[in-house]
Image 1 (cartoon, rainbow, N blue to C red):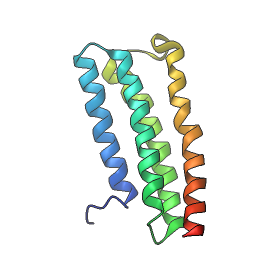
Image 2: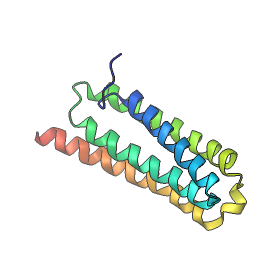
Image 3: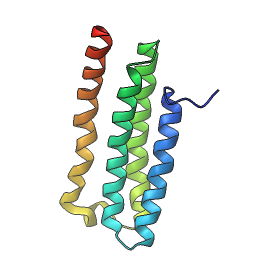
Image 4: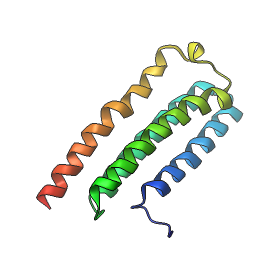
Length: 121
């Protein structure tokens, strides 16, 4: 399998690498809450990168299935990695946890825009 930005598995792998790097950097900088924010922002980066690449993929339905399943997996990974690496529990994070809602709101909108662009193209 060649490295391609159009492959959702490589997109997810890059997202996981950046997420772990960001969490470790913020843990070492003793800014643990920012680690949680970075994990959510990396999820938003995956959403954007995935939808933008979806415009150019030939088999859209298989791509969408893989992408949505990988997105769900990345969300679970972010929820489990963030407390492990930063050392903060969910209750310590408080109201800042609302940033994790953004990918769930953002991703379906981006997928709809991707579908419209594919239809127009």
